[in-house]
Image (cartoon, rainbow, N blue to C red; front, side, top):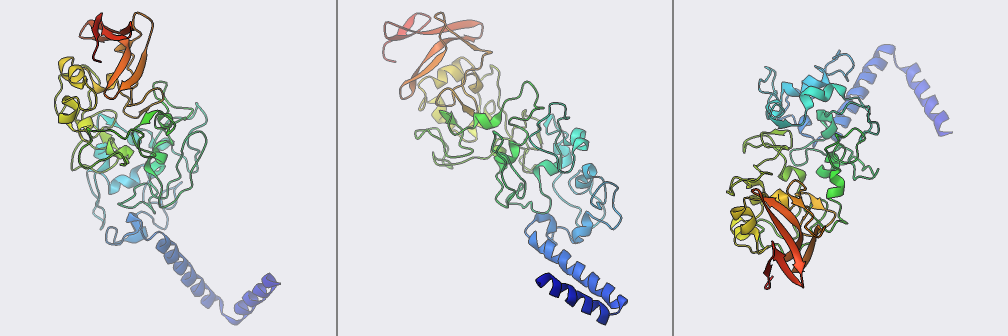
Length: 376
């Protein structure tokens, strides 16, 4: 009945108004709807008139690039008109230089692979035959992205087949998991990051939730055991004035600071990434582990020889031994046993500067190469 009355009303309007008036009215309605839609996304940085005075026409035009939504240029090139080293001459074509970041030693390969991007594609990839790629639009919703939340409006992923709804509160790590979890076309050497940060693990850096360890004396003043971090706290531009986000860096894998994974002399720069959150003085004073200085300074051992910077499915304290340097001991044991705080027993053999150190428990005593430590 309601539809019938509506149709009768439309028929009456068409009879009363001339075709010219109807066309004009249609244009007014379309313009109004366009402004209403823009207003729905008015919080987005790309719809901020102070940044883009030309509004929608900054990116769109009446007869746009073929195969696009009336864009000024192909998707792979459009963003770099404002976010490249050379800006255009149109008003509003200013922005952080993302292109140069994507040209660094370690980077998301947007320049090389974005042409594989397909509208409406399924992420994570479920076919190993699909070319692995990344495009600006995989991480950013250009209408809803804001300075405070660059991934606002992007649908995320929590792992194990669970997708999240796109919202203004989109979480950065859920967007990262779209490609760095269980994608079928992931490289053989990659790992499922969502499993490393799994909150059921014995230990993890506090990405999805606060950490489990309530005794972390090495934390810098800005942090405490209730603090949370984001992926981009560690991954991002290696220059202090560079754009935010994990676009590119000269420190692999897209790290903001230096983090050596080989045997190197300890210094504030060697493990600058770790020292951005953990107090170097506390670490070298053995406040959290009674043998930190012996390992890091006297043996030049990298933090990564014993710790996984994401999380550990095996042990507390992010312990996940690097099998390049750590092996089963003479008894075939490879384990980390938490005993007294700061004094764990590691049953293993490690190779340091060409020397093997065999860690065992003999008659209840903790021994290294036969030298027992009764007070340990």
